[in-house]
Length: 232
Image (tube, rainbow, N blue to C red; front, side):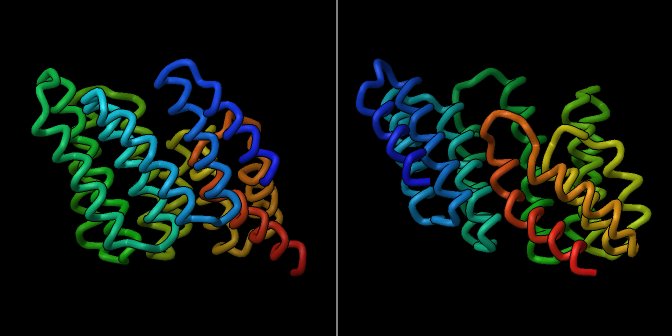
């Protein structure tokens, strides 16, 4: 971790433009999250947000705000995550970006509300917002968002301990997303299929993709689940 942060700081020091500065800060934030240094990750992402704010880059400001909300959510700070996501989506709604972009962001708001509700075990709200998200994604024929809608449904079913239904939904979600794979591992563990749970948990923990929040949010938990399966 120390070496990773040191290299990110070196990159930041020699960055030639805002894009490179933002990339350096993102890399550092990802490292901090993986290290469970949540406050450092949040401070780093706020620096990234400030770069976008300096040039009035509303789209990146909103994206950074949602990423900050995701970090808060992963850390169990549900109320703070809810507030940060709301601010990010309001920023888009009040922007001068094209209507199509704003409409798509408004659809994404349902996704974020559902995730926050689920984290707070507010299943009624989670179901309602997930249904709205699926309806909007289907109407737009947006395959990415349709897969996310199935992920939401699978996560809700997992919280309800409806493990078969959870796996059915998660199978229709993005199979390259470590969060989806980890949720499938949890559902398999819930069914008592520890062999499959361990296989999926290790896959989620060792997903060979570019650094992304989806990976660092679940990697440690996936390893812990795999080790737990080993002990049984």
